[in-house]
Image 1 (cartoon, one colour):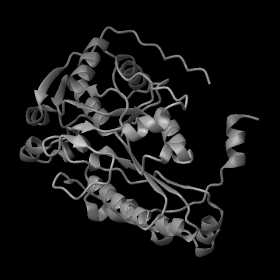
Image 2 (cartoon, one colour; image 1 turned 180 degrees about the vertical axis):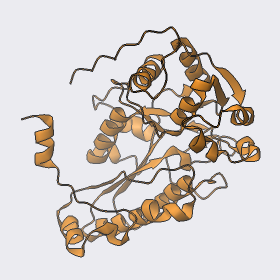
Image 3 (cartoon, helix red, strand yellow; image 1 turned 90 degrees about the horizontal axis):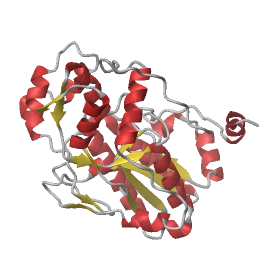
Length: 322
């Protein structure tokens, strides 16, 4: 039996819509789920750095409320995937605790606000005794063994717009990267192992060394792309409007004033709950650095997301063994 065949034998897909009442499901379907689910994992959202809270509320926040109601029928554990961007920036808080966060003025964008509002609902549910966990992730990058890139990711949109033009912006000092396969293994272990969740209910998945943007740009240059680093406002001004990904990327920085005020850097991210929960699990931490970025760039060139560096011969990366 192949992997796809095994998956089909274990997975039943129900078409639904997060933004619709009752998730777009019939009452009978919801009743069946409430009666048969052993656990609920909520990893779905509309991810956009451009849209405001009002347009994201239904899909990102009300869906959480609907799933909490579903979980409450038979006290089913609910495991929610959130984002470290709900935390205040380093200029406002030196640390990101593994705890629910009060409202703060760093919640400036609709996606942040919608995820924080969902966490608030989960905090209230936990206070009433419902078993919930919250798993905050940083930048989720492709699997550690492949070069796959989410072309809609904000940073990769910036790189895809800037590299062909030979200019990249100064955005932040460093950030948390988590390969998606490591994030998935960690989340499943922490959610389904009672001893691992004892330290929760909030888990900051930030156990890997933070990635410095200056290093990323060094690795891009080593790969063969000549790039200049510019302050964000100057980069915004000089980026050609014809760049394939420029329109979406520039829309986020819709004024020089907003660009100058954008604060993306987090303070020290506490991750003791995750470290303790993964201890003895056999889940190994992948390397996040030069080799991973080179695999990402290989993927971008192979798939046509980026032009090959001048004078560099490129061959398709080997497919990792399954």
